[in-house]
Length: 200
Image (cartoon, rainbow, N blue to C red; front, top):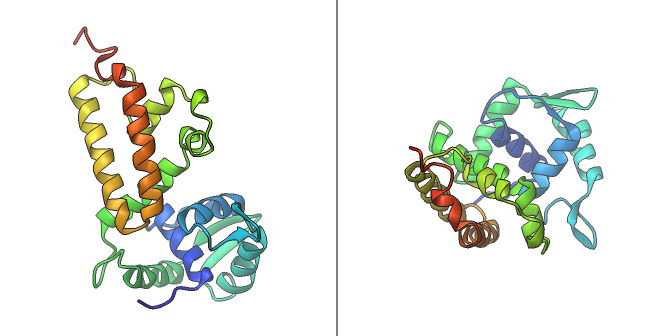
């Protein structure tokens, strides 16, 4: 597989986060989600848990913007048509897209990686702060609420766990951490499976 540069990884992450559309993101947001999407590539030396903003600044202001791949003003960034075209090509090398178009299912998987790993509850979990988790973290992770019916709740849990399994093809480490978090939530909030819906 062709080696992807850091510049291209940033471009592709913005593309995935925006679901292939021209969505505006703040510079700081890009730093955060790219660092999570490609762990290890954008970290401060000696501090792998923290992103190095200088890497992003150089790539965005001195490579992506001058090459017409990204527009940025007042720290607000958006892909250009050329940027979207380039990101689609990058996706082929990363085995995320098919031979001609971006595969929506694959984009959804990467979108879910961003969604789940950005949740406050997940961050608490991986930082060993399980005691601070609350039932809302369960609902946020499985995309349900206290009013969700039991069958729908069960279906969502099954769907999320299926996505986590597919994430192995993108990032095994993240997949493993998400699987641990999912299992923990199920084991500790199992009563929520039938809670709040008895009247239905």
